[in-house]
Length: 304
Image (cartoon, rainbow, N blue to C red; front, side, top):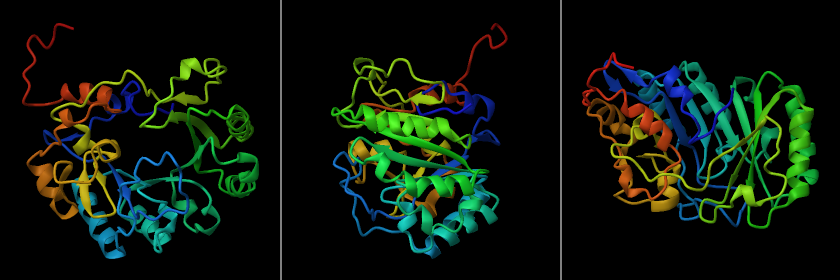
């Protein structure tokens, strides 16, 4: 089973991010660099500083810190395009050697240069209405065929100018390859598309996960996910999640601290105040995680 943000929070029910009575970062999202080889018109992180990039020394220190905190998984994403980082292979192998599993979100164009694919648990290739899949699938197909032990997936961003033929080409490709586990569909965070109004999106195969993008709830205080799955951006600062930066930007009110302060953030349970967020993709996760909060007394616990 594969799930998306704001879906039924089965992962935290099966694997609560609680240790010694405190929430801890079971998963860390890591933006290695803000540089990118594309200029997508809908880019949700256009306000980022393009020159920001974590050094290899930063990554070594981050791996040491999060390993000590008990982190089990790292998602490399952006920001920019993670594969553009000059030490991408060394970073993946370093994190894996620290006992932490690694997933990668990429636009896929530079996959040929990645030598550490065998070390990945999964890899999700981002696609959209603007890039023509027929012109790029030659990049992906041989790599996917050569690394079938990796759980591959696609995400497809739907715009208000939905390219039905392009989406179908991606979906046909997903259905053709057994090592591609699913296709996740989402839409522009600033201009969300109502899926139900698009023909043919209501009768899709089971391998398609529709990420909710309308009628989502506002943020929570405390935002438990800001500790369960914090984001370390390419500037070295810790944020609640990527959506915080997309909607509120990089500023003092969105920053939880620097990565070097992460042990103190966890020790003192310094959650992000999610009420600043008008929408939250982790609202269902936060509702579930509230049940584990030791500060909240639940009466008549045995009366189910």
